[in-house]
Image (cartoon, rainbow, N blue to C red; front, side, top):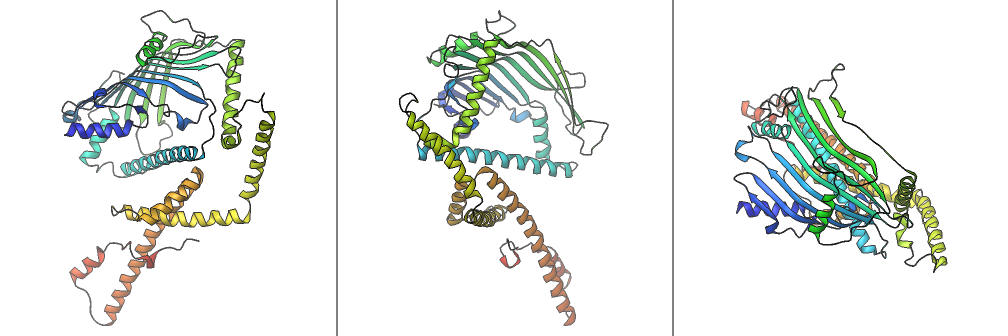
Length: 467
C-alpha cells in the first residue's frame, strides 16, 4: 500500500519530464529506503521552460536512484545517484501558430516560474526562522538539517548533444557537452568523506570531484539518426571521454578536464568580516581551450539564431508558413506587422485606459491574494468566484506584475495583522476604562481571557483600505 502511494507521488513529480513512467520502470522498497527509476524517456516538452530554439529529439535517463535510510537518518546519509543521461537536441522548426496551444504553454511556464519563486521565498522565511530559533529547534527540524547537511550526490555518464544543419547549412555541426562523473560529499576537516552527527557546528566542508568534463564542436559531423532509445544511449555513451578508454575524436572547445572543489561553508548567523561565508578552493589538473575559424563561425551563427528566435517569440503569430523565396510579400507583411505591433504596445502601455486598467488589476489582485494568505493560516481556501478571479488575472498579467502584486499583498497582509492587533488592544483598553468607571473589574480569569484572545481575522472592520 505504502509502495503504491510512493509510486503515485513519484509519477506526479516526474510526470512533467518523463513519459511512459510505468510500474515496471521503477522499484520502490520503503523499508530499505530505496527508490530506483530505470530506462525512461524524457518528454519532448521537458525543455520548453528554457524557451530556447532547440527541440528534444530523444532523451533517455538510464537510472535515478534515491537512497533514504528512514530508520537510520541520524547516522547514515541520504544519497542521490543519477547515471547515463543522454539528450539528443536539434534546431527548433517553426510550426503553424496555434493561439490556444501557445496560451496554454505560456500559462504553464508562468505557473512553474511562479511556483519556483514561491519556493525560494519559503526557503528564505524558513532560514530566517531557523536563524532566530536555532537553539530551540525541534527534533524534526534538527533531523531535516542533518539530512540536508549530509546529502550526497553522484552523477555519472552525461552526454548532451546538439546537431544543427540549419544555422550553417554548408557545414552541419554537432555541439556536445559530456561528463564522466561529478560527486559531491560532506567531509571532515581533512577532506575525507564523513557523516556529520552534529550539524550545529558553524563550519561545514563539502568536496566536489569532477572527472572529464568536456565541450566539443564537430564541424561536418555525422548525425545520429533518431533510433531505438537504447541504441542511441549506447552511441552517445561511446562518445564520452573517460579515464578508462581512449578519448573520442572530437574537435574540443574545452578538452576533457578533471578538477576538485573544496567548499567551506560558514553557517554563523552573525557577520564577521574576517571570516567569509563561503571559501572555495578550486584545483584543475589542466585546462585546454581551443577555437578554430570554422567553429567560431558556427558558434556565431548559432548565437545569432538564438538571439533572433528570442526576439521573434512575441511576433510568431504573424510569421508566414511559406518560404521567403516563394512568397516574399508575406514576409514583408510579417516585418511590417511586427513593427506596428511593437509601436501599438508602446502607445497602449502609456495610454490612460491601460494605466487605469493596471491600477484596477493591482487593487483586485492584492485584495484577493491577501484574502488567500489570510485563509491559508486557517487551512481554508478561496471560494470558486475568487479562485476564478485570481486565475483570470494571472493568465492576463505577466510574470513581473504578478510577482510585484504578490509582494504588495504580503506586505499589506502583514500590516493588516498588525493593524488588527492594535485595534483589538485599543478595544480591550476601552473596555477596561468603562469597567473601571462603572466600579467593576474583571477578575484574574477575565484578564487572562483578554490577554489570550486571538486576533479576529474575519472581522473586516479592522481591514486596511488599499488605494
